[in-house]
Amino acid sequence: AQQKAALAAFKAPGRRVLVATSAAEEGLDIPTCSVVVRFRPAATGVQRVQSRGRGRLHGAAYLVLMLQGSLDVHLHSKSMKEEEVMRAHMEELRRQQAAGAAAGRRQW
Image (cartoon, rainbow, N blue to C red):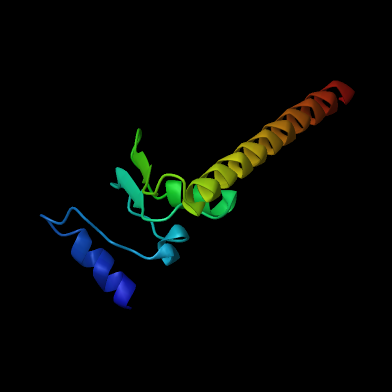
């Protein structure tokens, strides 16, 4: 109920900043969101994808604040690598699916 009230207030004219906890990574949908700022890097690739996905507008910015030389830099690097691995797996699945669909069409 509190989250719904906050979202309704945010959508009112003149509201441009919404501050949310990591709970906003999943399920929060604001189509006009153009900038996502994380105050700590994502610990996993899944968290990174989910939080980056809050920026719905085309060309939305995703910013991560971190202290140089800290554990945050390591977490950020780790989550980026995990996202790259997930994307590579998804691309391979798409290729396999397309090849399977093409083979199925040839059988008929």
